[in-house]
Image (cartoon, rainbow, N blue to C red):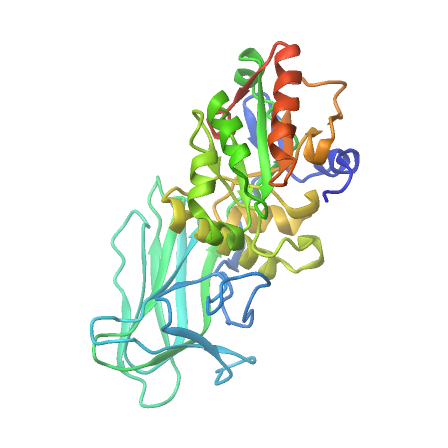
Amino acid sequence: MHTSLRRIACATVGALTVLGAAGPTAAHAEAAPAVNLATNPGFEITSLPLADWGTIPGWQCVPGEAFIRDTARTGAAALTVTPANDHSNGECAQTVAVRPNSTYTYSAWVRGSYVFLGATGTGNDVAPSWTETTNGGWQKLTTRFTTGPDASTVRLYLHGWYEQGAFSADDVELSGPAVDPAWATWNVPYPAAVQDKKVFFTVDDGWQRTPEVLNVVEANKLPVTAFPLPMPVGFEPDFFKRVTSAGTGGSVEVHSVSHRDLTTLPLADQQAEICTARDSVAQRYGTVPKVFRPPYFAFNADTLQAAANCGLRTVMTATADYSWGASTSYRGGLQAGDVVIFHFSDTLATDLQRALADVTAAGLTVGGLRSYLP
């Protein structure tokens, strides 16, 4: 169960970003230092709790072809890809947020024949770096690019070539300036949400999925924002699609992979948790998430940076809790801009009905969260 919303309110007020009249702003350094932005760059994060078997945290690889082995260049692990057939090049890729009009260097140490490294989505053409053979040892591949004015994310890829056998990679690095941290909030403070008298229904986790929930959501055309974990999504992906498609502005967003308290993890592990969950949503539903809800509402400065590195600009908690029969509001009753949290549980159908009655009594209506965020 989530921690006290009162404590979360204090955490949100103490966040590193500032809410202005026109939305979130953040202090810009005159020259952002170059850091390694790659997710799980050394393949030292070998697995995440509750993740699908065989996945590489932070990377999207061809299923059944990519594994983490102990034959590392440095550290304890490296990536090894064995294409399943002559029609596969064994590509592994990841998406990372970047600044526009900024220069980045992308590199990795590889081993094998005809191994390629490159980036797409930069806004400019990027020549891949490649090697005909590393002669059994490790070789560093490097490419450099400058992002265009509209670039916000880039896709980094590594792959072999057809009919060339297995290849390995280790010590990946995307060196360049990081994006500003995400902003944290427990409500939607924008004037449009207040003027339109909207509150927002959000539902977490996904372990219990009942037809009664679909009946309530669809009968009332509720724009639900779901924050499910990847494992329950894998059990019944169509359920979450239906529950978020009943009203205009519903969406599936990110809630981490394992539901751990992310503040107990370093930034690199938090980034692997968030980016892997983001990729799961994007792959299942074809839409890129914008919002991250931290498990237990627990976040710190590393969480805000990790979310931003994964392209998620908002870290959202809540101002009211209607889970498991509760009717708790921490702003003196439901108000415009409030975010209500529920959980996918055996009481969710009645929880939604109770909250909807309170929303109506307050002269408010339910809005789609993504429609009111920048």
